[in-house]
Length: 57
Length: 475
Image (tube, rainbow over all chains, first blue to last red; front, top):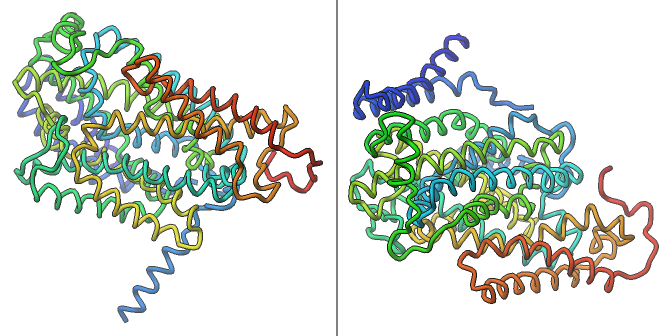
């Protein structure tokens, strides 16, 4: 389960930053970029807290 | 039943040990990764959406921005690594308890009270920044970067609610703060990066080769907006170096780095400086330029972020303000708890959160942020000098460290006079040199304090042998 959560979390980070590169390249619109960033944000915060090492020694 | 539940909660809160008046034991020290997350979270703040635009409005030139921020942030990282962290690891004490040993309980009470209030003001800035983003969800009037007073009652309610939530989270202590920052830290900088990058096409950048010309002509033009002073390379260097002077050369981050296993963990501050300050200030500067181009001459942090990053940008501003308000309220709680040690830390933190939330209702906490930071720097720079000299230099000069503790005095006059005279000297320099930037005085103030403290200590310390058992610092 943890590996799957990690994959989803990193996908969330990719969705946060990669669309901006596509906007810069003129491949997608700014509105689509904002929607993809929102999706990436949800993916990150719904998955990352469950696997990040929260009990630091 | 309800009374029993409440008693249990109070007992649980009281049992949280933050080692306010004892060295942090080795078993409780934390790894490097913890500090990277903490520093990244704290220094990628909502106020990065304020400072980046500030540079644009004050007419910084593109070259001055890129080189000045590089030099200034390197100096800041070195200040944490070479000055703050070594002393924190050596003593493992909070700055407040260390100061009490040096200057006495009565004098440190004055420092704690003022420092606690300063921290409240900073936390208020962070809460207010978060509120400018949250307000976008409710379609309410939002104060801009130049406003001073609240523009609606709904703004006041919103700020109070956000402040209340932030305060409750802070009460549960350092571990919870670090956890929350740790989760947010990887995501937030990507939002800044994405927002800045996606705004470039609208400014006329269609390829990387276009960037430098657009940067000089449309973003950092070198021409200040009407009514604003001009920021040069030196303004950028000094601001980026000393905006957190209270924490590094002022030693406030002793309270965080006392948990470090090694002094080299001071390098974790680079995560905050180069991601949070360097990259984020450049990105937010780009967003401000876009707002100016669209005719908005008084944007708010929330509006700037929403323009290029949508809902994710709004959430980023809220979270960024939150993750910085948390450790700031924590520090203020520690400062004031040292003043009234019989009151439990969580109760003091609650009172601090209430004060910060009330101050946050004033938009001036954002629009005058540079002045707040500059006053803070001038106030704490002499204190940092006193601690550094007391720990490292005094033994070499046959002067006694922790003099107030050893002599059992409540007020060390050498420290008091050093502090007041060096602050006054810093202000006098500011007036005499007709400086346009208060920050320029913090470094001279630090050295003036260092000189004065040695001189006054030589005059005031009595010539008595030091008992072997009186050594309180850990080797």
